[in-house]
Image 1 (cartoon, rainbow, N blue to C red):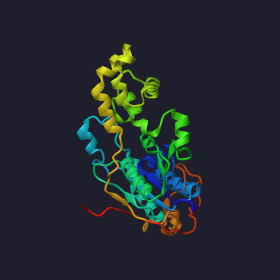
Image 2: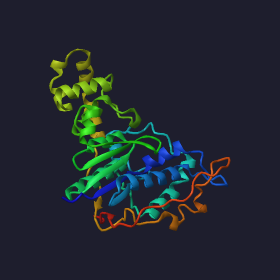
Image 3: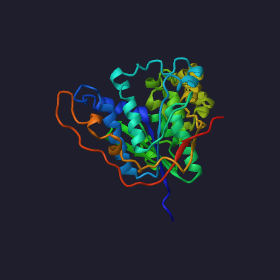
Image 4: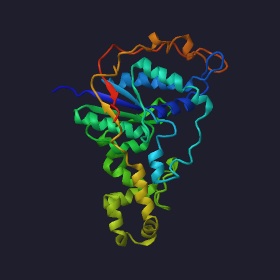
Length: 310
């Protein structure tokens, strides 16, 4: 039996932020910040080494318009997010150059977030019997775990990760990936300003899903649940179902998997200047040599392109 091909999709801004906060003191000799770019490139190399993918793409949150559709459902969605730090924004051009050097297409679409793009590509890959690994710091992506799809979750910086398949997910969360959206809908998600049910935390949400299986069944059994918990659930019924709508990934993003593009290991970052002196990966702020060259393995063919307009 042939080993299935593998697609890796990277949540670009998630990795970028992790690199920024883990290595924010890196800069060129003249003070230009490079920590986020360095972290992104290092994660890229690690992905190539760990997963040996046939195909790679980077899902990118398009500035300002990526959350527009969810904001139409709930105006306060992600309203608590702070603007991107300016010294991080300065590095986006460099990160795009890193993606180009690796030969990885960077995909961004109006009204779809990066995790929607990741999920859409994973669904298309599954239809072709291609396995997927989704690299992200966003827990919502765990809803996509299945026989063909794993999630490599960034735990700290760009070096500590945990990869979930169906078995390890169920061991960790005591539920199926399909139940994860309902679990999060009950408890909400402060990081995205998703309300959930006021007063229902992680433990109660987990117990309710374990007992009744789904959000719909929880609300069918309020009389059995009783007490203060039932009252909380009843008071915030609309918020619970709205929260689920926000958390569920949209798997129809207008991007298309095509096995004729994007060489997963076909580009040499050093040849395009990513690791040359101009890349600025060599000094910490205040001085000190930090990194030598970047290299990728031998070339291997693979392809991924955005869908045609319309």
